Each structure stands twice: as structure tokens, then as C-alpha cells.
Length: 369
View 1 (cartoon, rainbow, N blue to C red):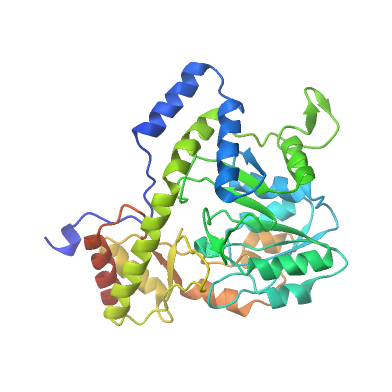
View 2: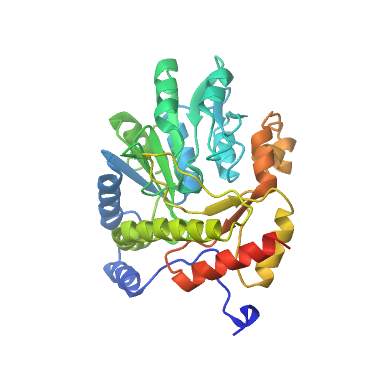
């Protein structure tokens, strides 16, 4: 069978089976569909998995970021230091709170926030720092936490791609307030949803109030909040998925090792993903760097039936709406270079050894033109 005749290998493949379907039916038959006992059970299970006292479920990863920022008191006039090399929600969550995103550059090896640049960007208006554990690779979160502790700043971890990732033996999402997404393509899903992990009792209390229209008791609204609640339908799916997460993460890690080994054996001229010793990269994405003709390589892979993604083709500060709103100022050459060079390849748990060989072989042919 020729490569063109083989089934396409998608860039992502959500894994949802009969167990999730049964869990949803149980919720439907219970009659309790909104935030209820299944959501509480999912929160408890996720907090245990991450290693925090609290987990607060919400209806998207973006909601998690907004609620966490508001729980720390981020508002108009404040600044939040973050990366421009991420999905736009990293910045729009800050803007939604009335604050200003301050973009500092990444480090070239891991695509994550450079702690040295964070220190230099702090002003009297800085309220928080929001690193992103991009692609499932931990940021230098212990260094960033030390900066935040020393300067009295909140630390909000955008861990939307990093379920189960670890920095020096400790799960991300435990250093500050961790914010996770359960979008269908993530390492686990609830269909759509998010969650905040935190040890601070008061921050957790505020998160629960903010996600539920600002009410501590029914119909008494002492605080400002909106409807960010998770449904029990989503939580039921999440509980099942959480039970499989470690198996799926380990499959992603094995696939990444095998794919890297095959690409190196073929001597494909790309830069492979890296992970610092002592860290755990959970490979939400397997992202290589291609110095020349990245877009042409992507087109040739598509013709060969290999799904790919560019995460992300335009740094946030260059997005039209961000520039229009007056937040486009940034000196971030490494982020801009990364946007020109990155290409994500399939790495999901459903890949077979034959798939991995096919991806590497197709990449080799595509890069060599």
C-alpha cells in the first residue's frame, strides 16, 4: 500500500469510550445535571492526583485562568507578566480582569517563560506572574515561585497543556494556582471544562465564590462573579478520564522517545523537543523546530497523510485584536523566531510503532523536499 493510500494519522485523537458513556447516562438518569456531587467527587480526585488541598472545577481552561486571577485580586491598573508564545487565552484572561499583560520572552530550549526576564519586567503595578507549561513541558517554576515569593506576587500557572507534568519531582499546579483545560484534544478531557488547583484556603474560597455568580449563600451576592460552573455531565467524563491519565501520559512519553530516536536515526535536520533532567514532559504536543520552509514541510506532510499543527503561528502580541487593544508592545525575538519554526507532529496514545516509523520517514522526506 502506498503512503497516499494509507489512512491519515491525525494530530490528535480524543479517547472516549463506553465507560464515559455509562457515566454520562448515570448522571442524566440521576436528574442532577449542574454542579453537584459528581463535580465534587471529580474535584477531590483531581486534587489528590495533583497534590493540592483544593481543586475548583469550572467550565473551561480560560475560565480557570480568569477565576484564579480574580481570586488573587487582579484587576484594573494591574499588570501580569506572561509569555507571548502561547494560545491567546493566556493573555485575554488577563485582559478580561481589566489588567494589562506584560509580555517577556521565552528560552529557546523549552519555549517557556525566561525567569531572568521576568525579574527585570516587574514594576510597582505588577500583581502576578503567569507562566505557561507549554506543550506539557514544565517551566522553571521553582525559580519563578522564588521570584514571586520574594516580590510579593501571585503565581498563576497556566497548566492547560500539562496534566501530570512535573518539575524536579513535584507536579506542576502545586507551586501557585494551577489552571488546567479539559478541551477534547488535551491529555484528558471532560468534553469542555477546566479546573484550578491550589493549597491556599482563602484563594480556594474566593475561586468557589467567583465561579458561582459571587454568592457565598444562595441569592446573596456579596462579590462579583459569573457563571463559570462545571456540569456533573462533564465531571462524570472527567472522573473516568482521570483514571486513565497516567497510562495515557506514559504512552505519550514512550511515543515521544521512540519518535525522537527514529528521527535521530534518519538524521532529519530538525531540532527535537527537550526536557530538563528531573522534569517530566507529558507531551501534549511533540513539537520540532524547522529552520527553513516550515510551511512547505507542513504541506508535504499533509500530502503524505500526516496530521500536523503549528502551535503557534502568531505570537500573542502580534495578534490583530491584541494590537488593536493597545497591548502589542513587546521585544520578544525568540518567541517570534519560534512562531516561524515550530511544527507539532502526532504523539497521542493511539499511535502504533508502524505509525511512528511512518511519521519519521515522512518528516525526513518532507524536510529534504
